[in-house]
Image (cartoon, rainbow, N blue to C red; front, side, top):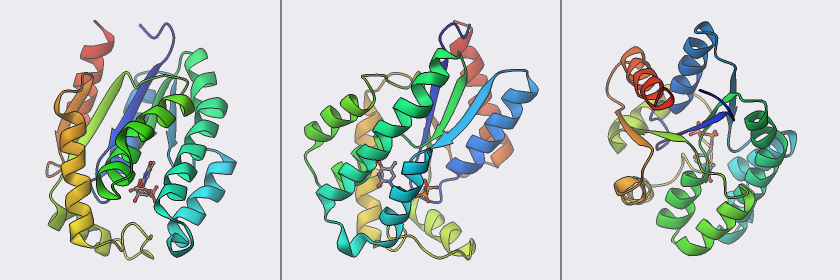
Length: 208
Ligand code: TYD
């Protein structure tokens, strides 16, 4: 296995538990002697960190289309600088969010042109698709409760109204309905259980 690297993305609404799964998965795989790279969008590169700050703090100065293009810009840099070299190094790459976040948030929730988003995503990603996507599914009420419990300053996305969250959630449902390489995980399970289920699906997939 692992002849040319393996790209995993983790998707879900804010508060679903993606970052925790990404960390747990990375730790467990490292213990099993896999060569793992943990990364994220937005913010996986130094350019991305600057873009992430703008995206989190300055929504009022950024129109919806510019918002998507900033995420796409982050993605282009991320693929060029981190993902493509790591695939060449045969690593298992775990990315906390990738292109499907733009489809769900900017496409379905902000209602930008879905086909344009797909085209620009493909361009930014050199037509590379994740080998496996973990989608953590959770209801909006639980997600919001978790976000407020963190006691951190809310990002411009986290300040959105329930209506926005519903559109993101419905968007994810549509995106993943007929997608191959998708594993849906129940976000209400314990973080340990979610990680175990993810590891099992991963091992199953890479041993094929
Ligand atoms: P971040 O602090 O990284 O949160 P999370 O841990 O939830 O990923 O913030 C990223 C935010 O940006 C998050 O609210 C989702 C949003 N986002 C988009 O709207 N489009 C995108 O393409 C990406 C990658 C993220």
